[in-house]
Length: 205
Image 1: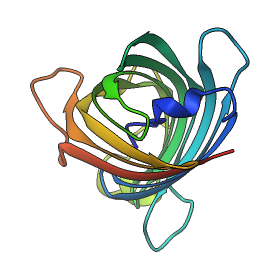
Image 2: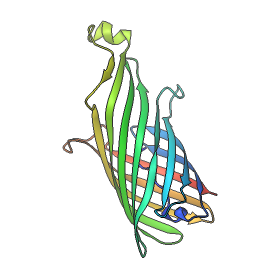
Image 3: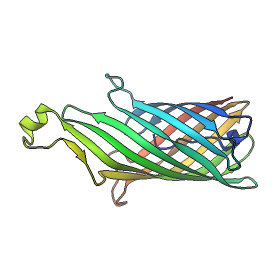
Image 4: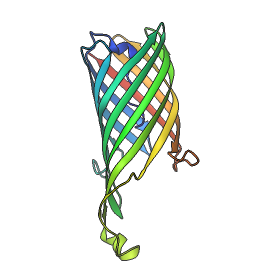
């Protein structure tokens, strides 16, 4: 999931807690659960935690966790800008190899906000910092027998994403949508599926 967005109007002091339920396309169909907590600070900041996992026959073998914060850094009339920083831990496995990865993500969003709706543009960068490889026997027997397991650094790659997002709020509920394009960090290539899409529901209390 590329964008852990929050409707900016939920930064109001009475909405300290938000529960997130999201469905999206990020190299496949992905489900996501999340929680946000608004700090009692002058700068509107929400601490956030998310857990996402893909659909498939084996539950919880692949997953992604994300912990960080989102802040509203600019508000001028109906114009608002938000910045988010996150730490990432994720796991992916297939018949050949299991990968565990620590990474980070930085994202920014600027948009036009009304009391019940908003629309804006977003951009972010997801970086894999260090990755552990654990190869299966089939890899050693059929591809490369002397392959080494362990943690590999420097970075094993990163993705830049950019797109649009919009949302509509009613009472303490919000429905949001986000979509856009994904490119590798070299910018001249794209992943196999070069787009992302996300539909989200939020309940604040």
